[in-house]
Length: 175
Image (cartoon, rainbow, N blue to C red; front, top):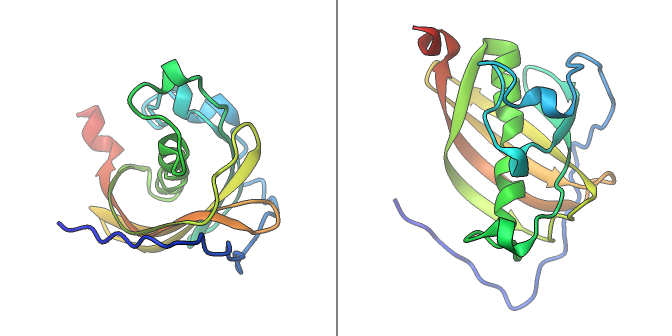
């Protein structure tokens, strides 16, 4: 595995997410903590990561979630202090794909790798932001998606492109 890091003297202007869709379809009505530690078909994350507030819309190609990350104190952040890239919101952004795999396939998933990560602006603390997860492919053992983290107007804070996830069947957990 290799990593390519491109450093720039100036931060590029944040692009606008062209496929912005914040319309509510009310297909998934669970909210907040109901997504977390609420049975085997929910996310397992602890309190610092339980910040998906609701699903705005979902289709076989895409899911858009509304999130809000409550800032943690320096002591709570420990060895993962929030700086330009926020490790908490980066992880939180990937929860959309779990919700998508649960809804359509009754499966769970974990992040595997991200081929490209771009950061244009800091994701705000204590403010609503959105994650649009575009599912590019899905097999029985993996999924590939693009995660676009943005504001209500579509200004992109960051994006993870060609993010690979490892899929497992919830039936395997019951065995």
